[in-house]
Image 1 (cartoon, rainbow, N blue to C red):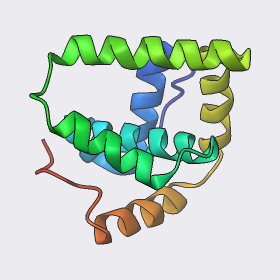
Image 2 (cartoon, rainbow, N blue to C red):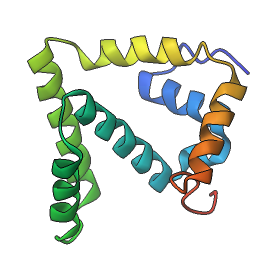
Image 3 (cartoon, rainbow, N blue to C red):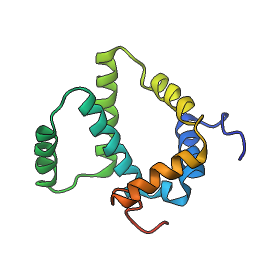
Amino acid sequence: MYNIDYLPRTERILTWAYEMFGPVATNLDERAARLLEETIELAQSCDVSKEVVLKIVDRVYGKPADHLPQELAGVCMTLDAFCGLLGVDPAMVSEIEYRRVSAFPKTYWEDRHALKVEDGIANLSEVK
């Protein structure tokens, strides 16, 4: 492993994910599933009910998929507004979390990922 601290934040985090999980970390559907999982956990921590989450899923999947860059921009704007509501900087909280999770050994992440694979929510497509 080499020192990745000099890389821009997004490259540093993707490099860390690749080092912990291997090539599957660069699969688009894997990254999207992990983002969805974290977003649901965020909603849960704000007392959004499972029923509301499922209604949102039904509503979204009841429409055609939109253009990826536009949806990514919507995620970024929504996160920025959420962080504004809380009075926190998204880059700052990301950096704090990166430092926290990068302290765990690779085996910790391998074990967690293996459980997600068993549950059918990880390794969703062939490793590219």
